[in-house]
Amino acid sequence: MIREIQRSASIFNDVIGPVMRGPSSSHCAAASMALQNILGMICDPVANRVEVPCLGKNVMAASNAISCANMALAGYDPVIPLDEVIESMDEVGKSIPSALRCTALGGLSITNTSREIEKRLDQ
Image (cartoon, rainbow, N blue to C red; front, side, top):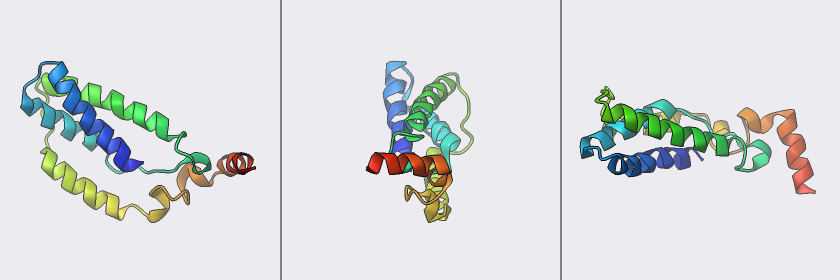
């Protein structure tokens, strides 16, 4: 799920940049900013399904991508270059506890409500 959101943010920026007639340099700037904004996001599917909160996180990533594309086109400096953000994201991803990496062993996945929903869906 985390990679799915990261991919959607980057891909969306690759699509948004050309549509908004921005220079290619704005694509990397927008992707850098978008990924910086979601760095460290966890995956904690409710009831071990990908609907909640995953759908909301993908919508947020798309909105983030649009905002970052606009910022890049306006000349906002992403500060950290995209290649360094990607390297950092790899390190952050490796340091996130396994319980928060799409295992349904942490975060919202282990709430009472999540477990009750999962039981109902498994019947």
